[in-house]
Length: 309
Image 1 (tube, helix red, strand yellow):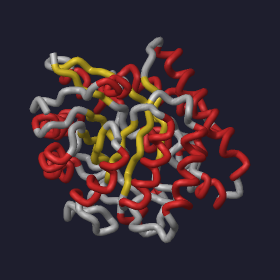
Image 2: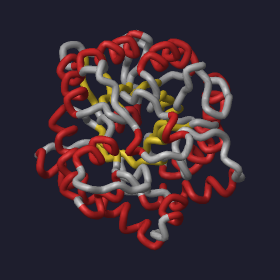
Image 3: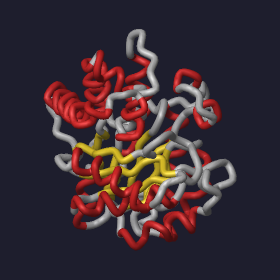
Image 4: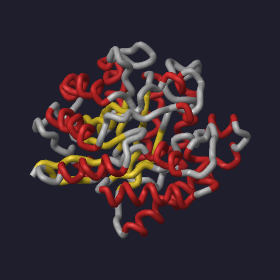
């Protein structure tokens, strides 16, 4: 039987949606500090849905973002708490899953090329990798330029564990920086990531790009968002302004997942506003034809996508 990696869904948005009376630039990290049981509950729901790899709730917990809020001294504590609530969720669900560390854009999502040097970015990513060293795997997510992607890859490979890098595409099929997908893949090939993926964009954009990505790299995947638009956040607004699409039901989302698999994807999951219900539907459908495995299984060989790549 062919195997496929199933990630969780949109952790941060689901946490933020369930939280009580919290609005913060630190998003789900702020929720975790005040209502940790909410984060534990979301993790547990994704585990019960069938996800085999769950990401730490640290997307907004970069040194740059915490420094802006005067919380830089809490960096280590926030990361430890993220591990704690995920492990509590595993205990609650009585299921062991991969813990995935999270290496996000350091300053903000959906931006272009940062005005920082490679060495400066590498130093910050290396700090995050050190804090996440207990993770089973690392996921570099929502990359919109090759400079940050290369720095994150350089830091991630130091841990000597499986790791993936995921790029976010615009409607034109390019990164926010203007770089092409071919240029993005070429930029990270020297760092030999376990997988190259696409994430946090419209599922149709991933479906369009997946055949080319699968022809460009041995192990690929995708996990889309369900936002109507990210423009408000890209222009400096709050996540409070983001709205979920009403037409992307669990069945509709899985139809896109099936397209990605048919194009050669070996890793699937969901990003912002993809809920435990979406992941549960996909897990049920995948189980009809695949063995669902954790990301760490890629250490000794990639999962086999539907096309046999």
